[in-house]
Length: 505
Image (cartoon, rainbow, N blue to C red; front, side, top):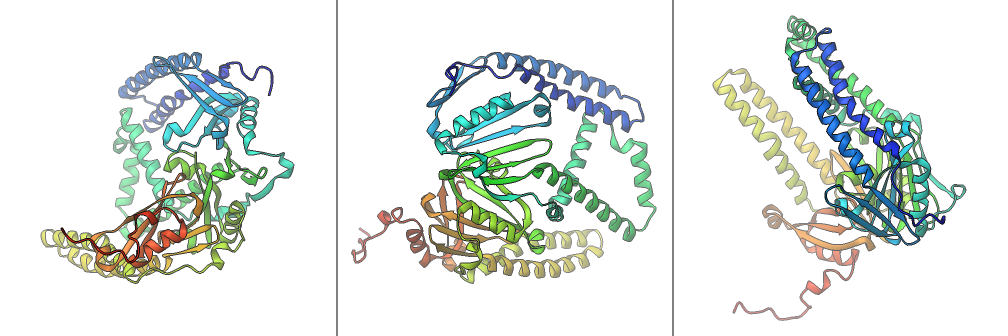
């Protein structure tokens, strides 16, 4: 480490230019308003733009003050960060507690040659589990990363054990998610709110009125399929673009015996490094459409990656790809045999779990809509009565099929140092969890579960979602499974064999 390593440093002055990104929303809103109104700017848009300009000035001034009050220091045994404007705060993290380092650069950061450094620690609850430095030069970021992970024993890139690289043939899996339709809805809703916020009434725009009139003049059996095809096409194009942006240049590798590094991203680049001791498992995800096409994705269960949402995003080890490739990456991350999931037979769960899933579908998917259609049919038109019984038949059949698939997916097994758990139908998830990472067990049940002898086990882990479920296990097997998977946790709460029962008094 250099002789100036112990000196307090300030983030790069170019960080102040990052606040220019606040100009994008008002300028984008102005452009949409001009396009929607044929070149005329509504009075409401000018007021909104003025308010945004004032907000931009305030935020930029606050950023200048925050930058002037931020200092960081890296010593031989700790990393310290001073920040705060009105309330000064200093966080000092010993280097042995740093478990992963995330280098993230948005397009604006890359244009300015800057990177955001996030160091995850052994804490797991939100901000306290992460120290963020926004932003430093790329060279300084890599210097910090090397020093912060020095205790992990990282080696040179020539010793890397590569787990996966991007294959552009995987793009065919990008549209096989439910967000193909949901993404179009989110984009349309966002555009509508922006236009409405700047005073543009979308339904008064000539182009929109002409399109609605044109659709109204045609038969529904033509317009509805055409709309579905158009939404599917737009959603698929959006999914392809998001896939390419997120996973451009993807590379996952063991950069030494103790660190797993994943690099990816086109516009926003990301380099995530996870220490081996904090990698407690790997999750294989197979959403319904992706599973039908033989694909899957892989996510790490690791500590120090933030909350549940951040853990899913930052712990991604493989994009949607062929299932054999996903199994290979999963095995490489766990350093286990490549046929770990396919070679180990899972213990099936009781048939009562099938009835539970079927009843849940009937209560929440079939019955409410059927009753609503019956009520509307009785008060409005008899045509809805026919829709009610058609929906009841179709939804009941679909519920039965999905319940059977969900029950077939249920299973668990103990294999070596791992607990294997599988569940789900809309997203079938198979978890390979290190048994040594389990720190507590929770036994939970419902009135239906108690009646049919079902118990759900939850393994508490200081990583990922912090709790992973083994759903609907036979009540007689739950305690034995918990004891076998992680001895020493539940034994002290059990009654010794042969001990006489206490009298009610």
